Amino acid sequence: MACSSVNLEEIPSESLMNELLHRMTCAPKPDKCLILIGPPGFGKGTQSPIIKDEHCLWLSQCPLATGDMLKAAVFAKTPLGIKAKKAMDKGELISDDLVVGIIDEAMKKPSCKKGFIFDGFPRTVAQAQKRILCI
Image (tube, rainbow, N blue to C red; front, side, top):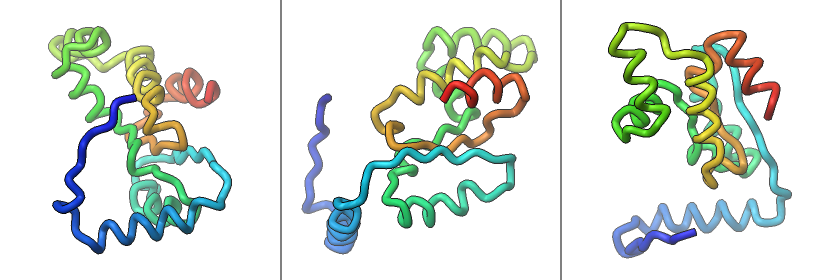
């Protein structure tokens, strides 16, 4: 995996110290995987920073917001994005299989290894059955 170069001089000292403190606090704790799911307005986004800190998780690195992911896939012209654009151009809803496919692709990212937050997913029972039951 490639590492990106970061100029530490550009990062505020307080941020660096907070990160160091977080890593020292979390180092002895076992790795966990946490998946937050709930209906819209349930408080996932509000509660995630508290849960992340309490359990030493990096949830903010992997928010799975289906609307944003669909837009990004369309913009990047991925195979799933091309299919989504065709449906959008016709004014159709995006199929459950397509939404689940985009979620599956995103969940494979290394940043999602320790957990993620579903935002806008699942919207249907079929989506829940196709993805949630397979986690």
